[in-house]
Image (cartoon, rainbow, N blue to C red):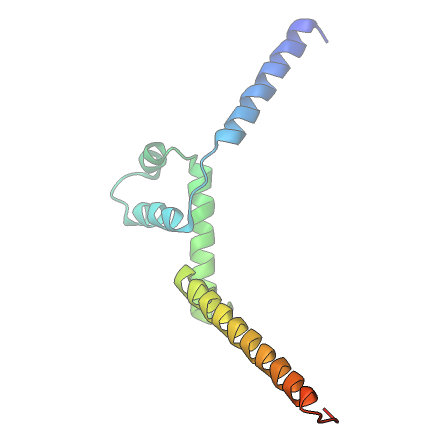
Amino acid sequence: MSEKENQNRSVEKTVRDIRRATRRNYSAEEKIRVVLEGLRGEDSIVELCRREGINTNIYYRWSKEFLEDGKKRLAGDIVREATSDEVRNLRTEARALKETLADLLMENRLLKKSMIGDGEDGI
C-alpha cells in the first residue's frame, strides 16, 4: 500500500470519527415529531429528511420502531415506561420516606437509650 493510500485512509477515518462525534442525538419527542410529519405526507420523505438533516434510512427505522411499538402497546404486550414527571414524583416520595425512616430509627434508638439509662433491662 502506498503512502498516498495510507494518507487517504487516515483522512477518511478522521472524517468518519468527526461525523460520529458530532452526530446529533434526537430525543424521543423529536423522533416522534419527525415520524408523524412523514406520516402526514405534506412533504416527501426525502424533503423531510433533508430538512431535518437525517438520512432516509434513519427515518424509516424510526417509523418502523414507532409503528411496531405502537402495535405492541395497543395489544398490551409492553409495560408503559414512567414519564419524567412520574419519576421525579417517585424520587421525591422515596426521599421523604427515607427521611421518615431515619427519624423513626433515631427516635427508636433514643428511646432504647433512655430506657437503659433508667435502669431497665431486657430490651
